[in-house]
Image (cartoon, rainbow, N blue to C red; front, side):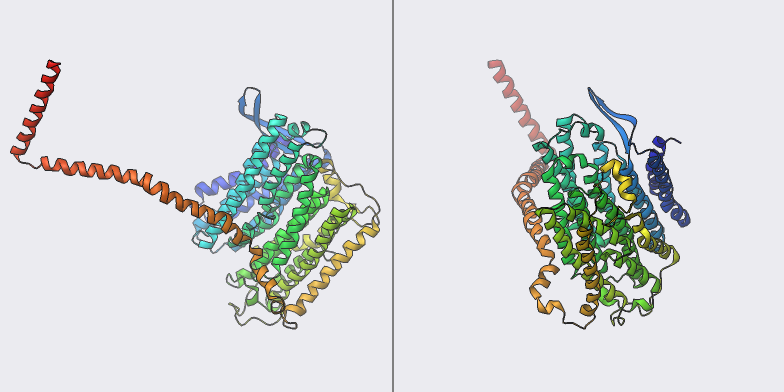
Length: 633
């Protein structure tokens, strides 16, 4: 089958699965739902593998056009898919890691009733096809469609337990904040169309000027607005921690492996624009570095295990933004792949713990799980060590290349960004160690809801083990030592699409990076001394810092005061000044007038003949007078 039709099949399979589950999910047996939900994702993964083979055989990008959607004068819009190595790379992440997570969900949401069970997998398949449309779209219009559908499916999945008020509020918050980014995407598309008269990637990129122009910078900043919102970067980040109200597989799929990395993909896909827009590219790197640091500091004080992972996700995506912002696209995407492995692993292993602890998520109520959930504990430790950046796990190699490439840029700005990454790496070791030691070691908490927790069933445990293996050996695809050219499959694979930094011997420049990751390992171990009762809690040493971090730098309070409060006050004023006196007043006035008229008529329509005769005579007199006046006139 030609690659053109395989690309369409990759999109169509999860769409078909979602449609079947939406229309017939209630009547299908649970076993059929368990096959259809994950099955279509795995079939799509096989299709992406075929596309991978085609990309390896021929690195040329394929721009497939299927049918004309809109034709108006010289404007032509068709349904296009753009299949290059970057699209294939992202497709592998979406369907590969996504397939493991959807399979894991078979066990995690197994307690749901049949209707909710089918609804969950329908939503998951909708998300997969939306994400695939986002990464395979060949023009800006369908990119925006995929972008918006990802936001919609995220809203549905976060609010899956719609009877929980917190879940509904979190879903609405995520949707609204992502719409802010959607507006930026739409405005950027209009601006690019005005100047290039194209909406396809190839047409827009070919129409870009040879040098930076103000409108290119504006378009790049508008695109960055969309990327920041979708990837939960400062200042549009506050929706991500609240999104942990959704089921844990949702957190693993959307808020670790795929959706939140869409902003990184967008910057990489638009690299032709950002290579021209140097100010916007610098903003990408700066926002990423600051987000990485701020999120890491907040993670230190979180007690909910999923919220620790949520802020960790923000921080690690900040590293990706840092990399693509300085032009190290391959480094950013390698860290994206590594993060998909170890963060999905951590979320799913945390899900095993939450499942065993009867939905308890407070780490302070765990403790001692190493002895009772040894398999999950080992897998969680592997993910934690990779997150910290300890050799030989994949996180070491991906962070090494991100920080190393940033350091190698030289100059005050890149070195300042590298310094922020250095501090963030130390904090990462600290909060990750805190999470590990509190949850799995020490004595069981007296507040633990389950005295003898059990290991997860195989359908939940096997995907975790697979991700643990990938986290352990995944670094082999991109070994980038400073003293030799290394083994760089990711960089070489993506080079025809996003380019690659030329290799040069940089032994001295990788020494600070290696030292950074080593110190991260030290803080991981230090966290054990600090949080298992051997040191005085830092909240008693610097209570103001504790309060500041627990309030998450007051972002929510500021937004509530500036935007939510303002909107509520505006709505109250509109109700008081417009709705009540004008709209409600008009409706009530008409009703009152009709009621009064009816009351007056009721005096006449009383059933007495004499009343009717009086009205008849009065009417006759009036009619006679009118006739006389007309005749006299």
